[in-house]
Amino acid sequence: MTLHLVRHGRPLVVVGAPAATWDLDPATYDDVWALRSRLPARATWFTSPEPKAVQTAQLLTDGDVGVVDDLREHQRSGEWAEDFAGAVRRAFERPDLPAVEGWEPLRDCRERVVAAVRRVREVHAGEDVVLVGHGTAWTLVVADLTGQPPDLARWAALGMPDLITVD
Picture 1 (tube, rainbow, N blue to C red):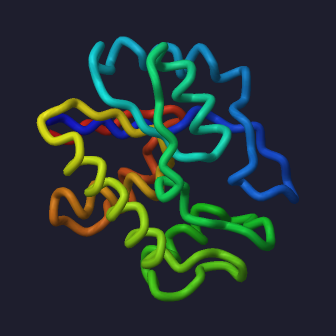
Picture 2 (picture 1 turned 180 degrees about the vertical axis):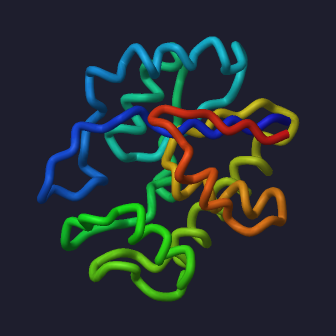
């Protein structure tokens, strides 16, 4: 089984609206479309319920895509974080605490997302699986699958969209 973790394309940022409600920026459609050739022709597909992830999945496959609520990103409600990268780094440094008021502790995100990925892998053992979701969530999943600490340099280098493949 090969697991393909797709990070959604660039969203249309709406300051003041929760990131979980943002749509995919139409200007990124070509970038998303370019990933199609890097993904298996036959695979089982799932996505986060967030609009930018669902819309990315819809551009990447003509097949069915299941929505798994627990694949949603690290929940970030509350104030807009001017230093977003710094806030995410703080979340990784102190995963038991919200990095910004209103943010989910990263530990909770890790438990939720990793458990969801494990369930998908168990049910679809032996199949290629494509999961469309989010950079922070995928950083936590890769750390779990490899037994390594989360790679913040890899997180910072992830594009929108991007692909991480794990055998």
